Length: 256
Image 1 (cartoon, rainbow, N blue to C red):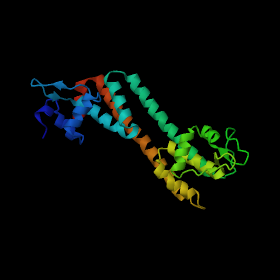
Image 2: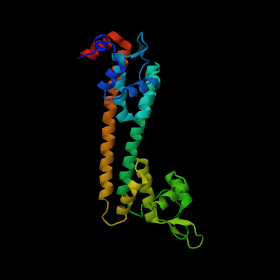
Image 3: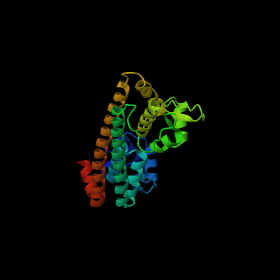
Image 4: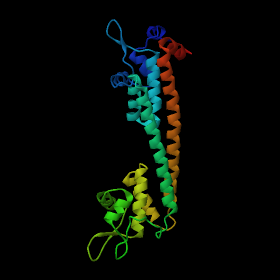
């Protein structure tokens, strides 16, 4: 049965928390962080919320799966201080990141299709005199620091050999291939420990199935994120509409 606060259009922190599977402290934290509008206070100093606060909380929780906690927080803070254009900019950047992640996935798939060690590496990768590529040109080609390539080497992801004359690291065709795949998978959010078994399989004949499985999982995660963004957009639009229409209309919608 609804409490007197709910019947009067007012919600206690516990009402808001229970309705969304949260603790009352989480609700207070969200308010202090600017995710929720500032609560009104009762004559005894207790926080009281409204249907508009419930709508704001619903919007935030819907935004998190698609945009992440930090971005969702930035969106709600901007909306609550009436900087709606700023909120839209943050949303646009998040969508742009999703698009970039899709392009990265396509690049990984292209790399998988292009595992021929004789594939052209581009004009920046100049072969050393004895065959292979030194660390500097390869790092520039990938857009990483030489220290990053050395880190991948320590993790067993890339296996350069040493130039017999200079002692410098020399990356043959297989090592360049592994560096390219590692770079693309890192951009896709994979940890070095997750990449290691995939690279190990690539090194064995006919061992591409684990990498293909990872790519399928990556596709699924991007699709789930895109769908979550749609759901978050719908809830945010409802919150924006209710902020414009006023508390009476918000309460009517919430009780419908």
